[in-house]
Length: 167
Image (cartoon, rainbow, N blue to C red; front, side, top):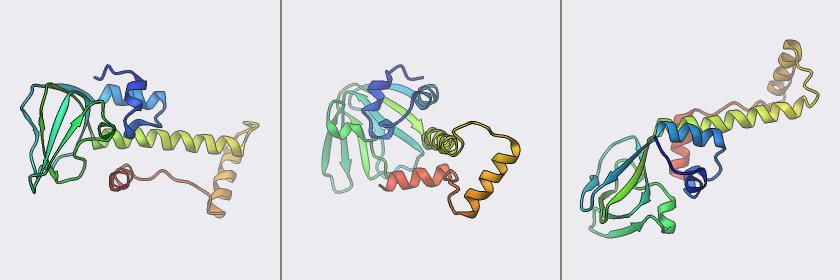
């Protein structure tokens, strides 16, 4: 479980536009680890479905060509997840004691889908501002949206995650 505040988590690009419900879900389904200095967190070429976010400390990323990058928790670069590309293009090791938040890609995808579902409800509410919804009116509205190619269905979480990772 994560104890960081929503405002602290909001500085990370993955969570910048999350609502409170999404933060609650992330906090309940993510883990926090403290790793001593000079430990390898992720090996070069590793395959995994874990997202690493640097909360405190400094990490060293070493690429296959031995180029190195240092990431400090208070830097702009730390606003992104660490070594997101699979297989990992970096060996990630701790330069100092670090605090890392970890969550599965599935957890992130579910949290993103929560926002998409909320937005769809909002869109439906604008169609029926009087809230005079009955099963017949709901069905009629869905059929109208479908007929006019305006029905928005949630994307598959896996696909959404892959698109977000590619961007």
